[in-house]
Length: 232
Image (cartoon, rainbow, N blue to C red; front, side):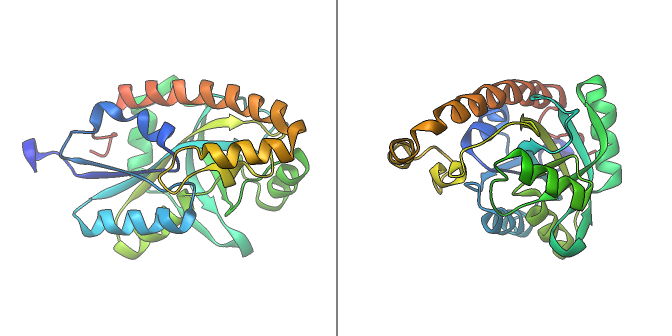
């Protein structure tokens, strides 16, 4: 490994999240993969990166807020991820601690709890139920699968997530349907869904504003951390 640097794997859900890491795209010690908002694929990609020599894998990107105190753009460093039936995984405390030290005041909530969902949690009622059942601060789709792959490989993993939609934000129920397998936006599906649900355009615009704010902060996070992502 060049310069003794650790080889890090990073999994994102969509291309816009991966774009925040574009400065590292040619760094031979960083592997960046996009899961296309598919939890199963996220786990597969993490496993592939461990097999290719990654010493640790980071789940990086957007998440949905469950705690009403969290705003779009807030950065969370989860300590634990909760899935269905009370199953949970603990993020590597040493790596997470180094991320906390490196990011300082950029982090809104340390020791956060992240809920896992295989689908978009679209409305305030469903978000409230998920928070009540799990106590989680936010929800995402990829991190639990990444953590499972890390546990199987006996390697560390950590999570950096930025709130894109708050606990009060209403999302179109079909939001995850317009993500292509490559992690981009499927324009045809987007237009078809808007034609079927014209009243959802306001929800989509609200999500866009929150995502833009969150991605801006994620780019700053990446810049502060550099390619090693505080792994060492």
